[in-house]
Length: 239
Length: 178
Image 1 (cartoon, rainbow over the protein chains, first blue to last red):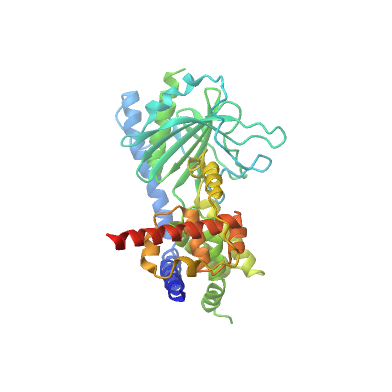
Image 2: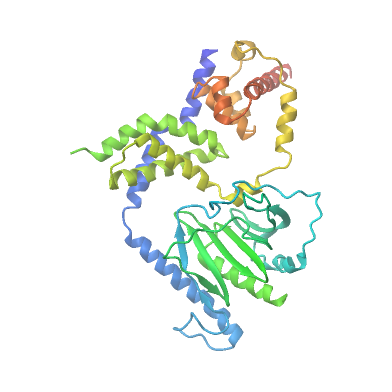
């Protein structure tokens, strides 16, 4: 009997190997010492985003690509400012802490036609996981929760979730700092956040009288820009 | 002058079990525990080298708490919400036998069970059951302590252990009969 307990304990010790974890921490710490390569990587990403966006502008405006002035051209205007955050965007003081699935029995009279365009925004290779109704964060005092509409696209480990609500920001709003900078994607003002050390982006914006909260995981900056551009374009077609 | 790396190593050894236990109890998937644990200590290491930390244990647990929370974004957690999960747990509780507090589960069921079989069987079970087993065998906690840690009933903890071990025993007996 004690043998089994000892063996099980050994198995757990092997799964959560103390020394192995220690080595990983020390090794990771040493890898992160130099900031130079990180800065170069960030700058390289910005150049890539700019370069990738140029063919789309040219296609729309029917002009040859230009080396400079890629940003702020009329047409597909892209001003991208990514704010790095330490905390999840979903923690906002004053709002109720939990979220739950909307009561499916209630008949909610919401005009869903506004959001049909999301079905056409599925990025290449991704799969539209579906659209459903969920409850977002409401106010503690009123105890009302906003009904939100969630559309998800998935490709293996990558996923993009678009949540829209008519009443309020679906999952709360950041307390933005003084250094916060907004972005603009094809004329739509957006707030773009990236969670520090994670490949997670949050994008908040208002469009067509609705509040949008986009959360992505595992996609690159250029994929994010492509998705947002497509979304804004498709939304514009439904006006 | 204090060697910071040696000091970090000492703190790591002393706090490892406590931090791991917290992460195991609060993470959604045990497979993520190692990653979260490494991220916790990595953040601690960086902070430790930058400024003096008054209450090391409190600081470490704070980092662990944040790491667990950040590891699972809200939309991820939302996706895993099931309307029926609570109902299922309630149904399971109905089947709890009246297991005496002083009963020894191993004596009753595990006379001839192989650790490898138990281990392999556990991998297929729900995360909450895996957590119960880990807290019971690795951290050697009592049923009551596990229940408090996971915010469940004590009878649920016993049920997890007892039913799972019974299933393994049944599978083994069926295997022998073939």
